[in-house]
Image (cartoon, rainbow, N blue to C red):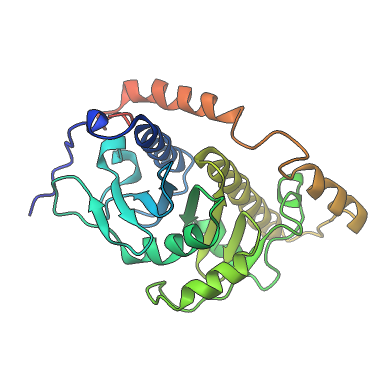
Length: 263
C-alpha cells in the first residue's frame, strides 16, 4: 500500500484562489492540533473552493492533523465524489461529506465547516443541560447555538436534513453524545468559533468538577453580552487573530520534522 506522505507541491497546478484556500485550510488543521483539539486521524475540516458552488477541500483519511499540507488536501464535491487527490492509497472518510457536505449545500455563505471530538466537547455533549453561560466566553453562544441529537455514526444521507435543521442559522452546534461543530464565512472565523466553543466546554467541565455552587448572570446581561459578540456588532472573528496564529505555526515549524503546512 502507498501510504507515503511526502506529497509534492501542486501550487502551480491550481488557481491562486484555490491555493490560498488550501493554505488557510492546512493552517487550520495545524492549529486544531496545536490547541489540543484532535482525535488521532479522525474528524474533518472542509473549505469551499472560491468561485465554486460545490467543490470542497478535505483531509486524507489516515493523516495526523500535524501532517496535513496544502498539497495533500483532497478536492471533492458535496456528494463526496473525489475530483482530485495526491497519488496515495489514502482516501476520504464518508462522515466528512455527509456532515460537512450537508451544511455546505444548505448554507452557501459558509466557506468552512469544522468538527471535533474533544474530551471537553464530548463531555458537554453528554450533559442534559448542554452548554451553560458560566463564562464570558460561553455567553457568546447564548441564543446562537444549535443542538443535534445523536443518531449513530454519521454515514446515512437522510441525516443531512436534520443536521441542517438543527444547526439553523447558527455558526456553532453541539452534537449530542458526539462532539462539536462550527462553521463560518471564512476558515479563520470557523477556527475562532471552535476555539471559543472548546474553551467554553473546558471551563464548564472544570467548574462543575469543583463541586461548588456556580453563578450565572441574569437574562438581561446574557442577551446583551451575546449580542455584543455577534458578527456585525464587532469585527469579524479571525481577522486580527489569524496572522498571529500563522506566526506561531511558522515559529514552531523550526523545531519539527513534519512538513510545513504551506508545502
